[in-house]
Image 1 (cartoon, rainbow, N blue to C red):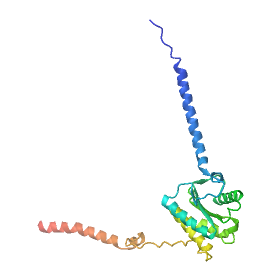
Image 2 (image 1 turned 180 degrees about the vertical axis):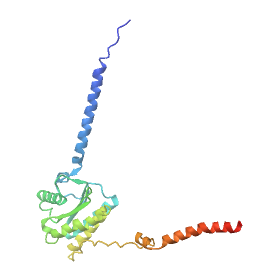
Image 3 (image 1 turned 90 degrees about the horizontal axis):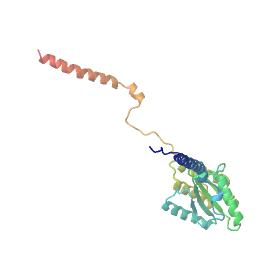
Length: 238
């Protein structure tokens, strides 16, 4: 009889496989932990100087047709010495607001290009909270006061964003309002909320049903439907 084979070499192999699985699990956990931070957007994620494009759709919220349309609309403000741009993002860095991001971008662009950074106007959209904001360089403060910018971001852009995440419509409404003011006309103000009246219907309400005598008629019809056949059978069976 031969000696039995020892299985000790299998033990290190199993231990190595278990160690590899542990490393894979740790790598996966670290990747999931860092994923939200990687998706967050801050000033460092944008160009150092004012970009040539008017639409910076970093969140991919706009279709190609919508981005092209907004590019043309934003470029029209160049005739009024206003360099308007639209910036979209998915989520902000922790502790950063849309207004803060816009102001930091304007300050960075001004530091890099003092002469070419005048008349800057930024429309910002964050898709995580469906929120909007508008900021402008200080030289536009007389024409576009801060109260107007805040109202445009909160109300004019906020309404279509909250009602179905309509990013293109929010941008168009904001541009229309700001362009009206830039042309020297009165501020049209934020959009008016439409009061939704109840739709008329022929279906009675619970109160109307309770107050009506429909239940009585149902009982009467049931009684008649039961007694008439019985009486007819009794008459003809005699």
